[in-house]
Image (tube, rainbow, N blue to C red; front, side):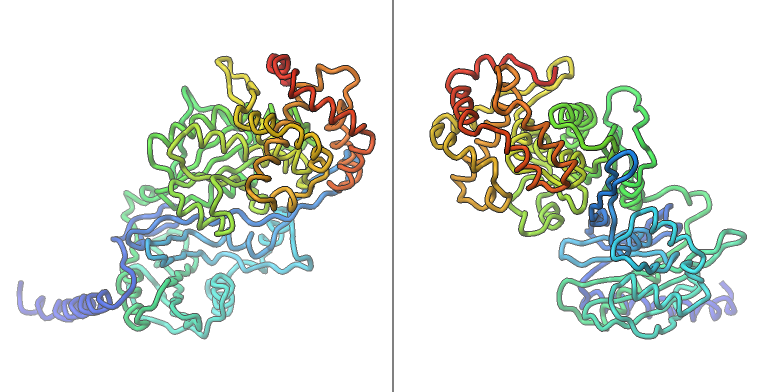
Length: 539
């Protein structure tokens, strides 16, 4: 190399050496480290992720149920906090490392629309979002600052311009934030040739513990922002993205309502994670980070069986309306991630239907049979919420049928078979006199009362709810002038009319001869079980 070339390269070498020193010093004091940059084809460039981090997809927005009355009857409509709908359109990805540090990446395309109402439907929100006035103008610094503050959901100060990574970034702005341990940057990737110009992006790093702020800032700028890169033209479409897992035997078939908003939002939520995947079947979409073959086996069963069980649910408890909903199932590989998602109050659970999120959330169990029992139980809760237009049903009906299906199975012909629950049957018959006496109270129980009892009483209530439902579905149809022959149908009809579960329950029970019902219930569990075992309520 000649002397002129050496002198030309000397400043560059000095800058790289200085950058290496900064990174080394920052790493010694900083709380996080980053992986080498990888390409994200759905985002459009290469970027480093937090080291030893997992993808943390955004949850579905919390829904608020509205029930409209139209010419054709009841029409359920979910409405949402506009901020949650907006955030899910702007957030590209989130990661959390083992220490709880989090990295968020957003794309600034639309400002948050304003509405007179607290909650809006997806259609109303989407129409407003597409208005020209809500587009972010990349040249308007006020638009960008407003967008960043909204995305971070914290006040930010006027940005500082940084001269950083001019190979890949046209502009970099640092937004000082009062929140300790939070670092906020916006950057505009460099346009190449005749390609479409990039939108502004925002990267937010939130630390879980104490760290040297100056060191962490230097680390983030040197290890994250300085390593953002544009991918080679030949590999722009290859990189990190979620895969669709088709565990079905034979060729996959087209699912119903492929453009249903729940399907669309669920797919988008995992777009930029290679540790998450999605699988679809009629009536359902499944999101999971389970990477094992056992997990794939569970998904195969879910794809095969969930539509069949949904038909069985509807057979025993018909829906109020003909509206078809798509049910979301989220299956975590680790219990720790499950607990973080559902919250500490539900840490005891093995699976959970979260009505506000419209999600059935589970984690991988050591036993597939145990997991499938939980799914059959919780999936009924999910179905019933939709079937009653989110109005609800009394706990005996809800938990009773969930327990009924928990112990069901598919036979060799793919038909649901409802069988007796040996453990609950034993508990019920051992306490039959008590159960018969308490039956009127069970049928009027509130959820607060049903769940609040001590563990032994709660176990008996579950056994009673299951036992009464088993009798209602398999014993009553075989009886003459059964006192509860129309109880379920009366409840559903009253719910459609009153749109109030308590009033509907009172109306359905008003015409029941309770003393006669108690005696029939007692006799069924003394001598009617064998005949009931041969009766199929799904035929």
